[in-house]
Length: 244
Ligand SMILES: Nc1ncnc2c1ncn2[C@@H]1O[C@H](COP(=O)(O)OP(=O)(O)OP(=O)(O)O)[C@@H](O)[C@H]1O
Image 1 (spheres, helix red, strand yellow):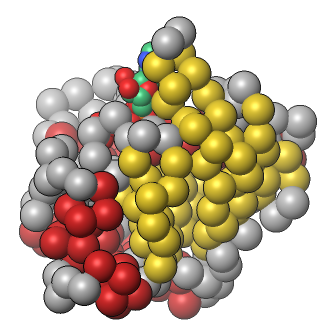
Image 2 (cartoon, protein in one colour):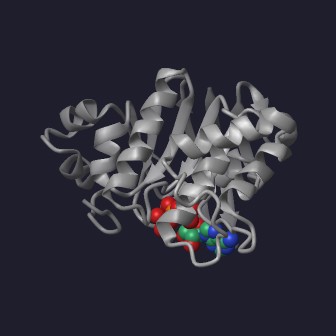
């Protein structure tokens, strides 16, 4: 379970997180939906320990990510908003490198790397160097790095950016499979369709705090609307920064 409680974080005069609290349970896909600048990336970065909150807690299975970052990170896979690839390494080598960082070696490392390559249908590019990779191919390498150690929790910041239709389907199937295995998945998005198609629970955030929370149906019911997009607009009071 991923839990954030009363998180606050300011950058100078900007209050990016304003007492944010929610839970992403096991075996569920939780979508963080919010307009540009709502605090989604700041929240995810705080959970995976890249940022320190001014106050409040981010817990992974009860472990405080600011107090025990290594223990907390052991069980999470991270697909960050910005990632870099080593241009001279092949996709396979980059994925294997992450497996090694998680303690894999020898045949186990090779097997884990191959499994991630197969799951993301990337055998055609697995042994090519990253130099010249398209945005979508880069995304797949980063996704494979996030899942290579088969984490119990997966945190993804806008995972479908730059992916074509087929790759988006592969991503969705992967997330559904992981959910079925009991993984807690938390991802941020401002793409309505993606959130509506995938999420068991939607946490709408605006100005660094939860504006509403529930299933797509519950949010529609709450606002008297029939589509998530309309419900969202009603909840946050504007359609700025949202993609249908
Ligand atoms: N390192 C930083 N320095 C200064 N301000 C920051 C920093 N990181 C985030 N902010 C500010 O905090 C607020 C929340 O930003 P954040 O990136 O978390 O939003 P977001 O919901 O992920 O937005 P987007 O959908 O545009 O990616 C914004 O006003 C942003 O400008």
